[in-house]
Image (cartoon, rainbow, N blue to C red; front, side, top):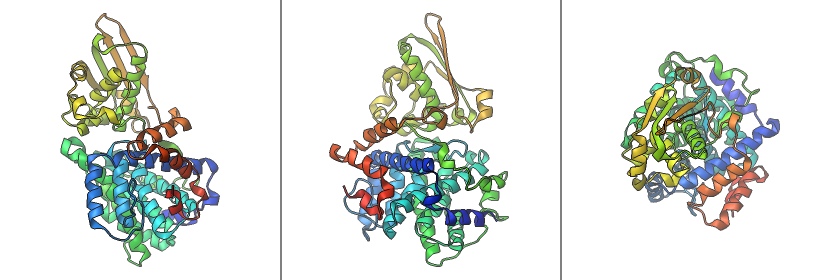
Length: 447
């Protein structure tokens, strides 16, 4: 039974059994998540949710990033999950089309603080959560992603297992936690196709984090559920992805660690735009100027064409999901960061002019390799008749096109500076990167 195998894996995995590179990767995922959450806490969705959490009050159990006072663990998971996902800066696993960090780490962190767990416990839970969530999502893609946002659906299972691991649930309790998670899993792709819906989209990650933690808490208290939530005839896999490959979930489980396949983001837009942004920056580096461009032809996979192919966004959220806008921004300004998504920028006449020369098309070969590769081609025809071309299979931040440790630290400094005083930024990096040394994870935040 799949559920039992996942629970057994989670139960038997210990920090001492984890390879050194897996531990290091888990710490980088934690650092990356906290940086993204610092930035997301300053955005409108973050402000709204923070106000709701603060009004609710409750027991001071866990850190809400950027706030001095602790909040109930469930609300910490909710808030931190939303912060991390709000600005499109959280990590990604390519072939599963899952953004694991934003549901898993907030749930595990909140559980660890509530129970007084150690840094080693947290690292182990993160690894286990990534493994379970990614494997479930991989078994269901790409058909599941046509209608369901994997971060909200599969992320709920991952958060439940991660929190359950921290809380030392036994095998049967972990199976029940999966059951509770499955009946709460949600996240419709319809939210991706309107400006208003895109503001709601970070709730997928935040509710997955909160519901995952809640599922583990229910199971810990003896609250039972079905033991076949994934594999049953009316279970999650058959209902949400009729063509799911169940065998992929446990294939090489405990041997190959999926967390090593994580992609990190350096641009504040959906990952479907990142290959195009990389190519635009290459062209800019060659000295190509926007005013010299006659035609900018972007070729990519069908999901990107359908989801992010439209120019002329009318809101900040639409801009993050507009490949022509992001490519044009890279060509004109040389970066695509948080500062590039403003009301003023989406009305920029220079960008509007360049977007009017953009086309977005499906390339059959690139499409055939998705989601294993999220590639793009960029062809530019200049007014003088010159033609230039760039292509990539792996955007910057993919395992095949890695960010250096310095680049990840630079990303953290840039994002955390939106929320933290300069005096604390280096201290946070140091604390997070030695998280395994803390006997109580609450000590990590004492700076």
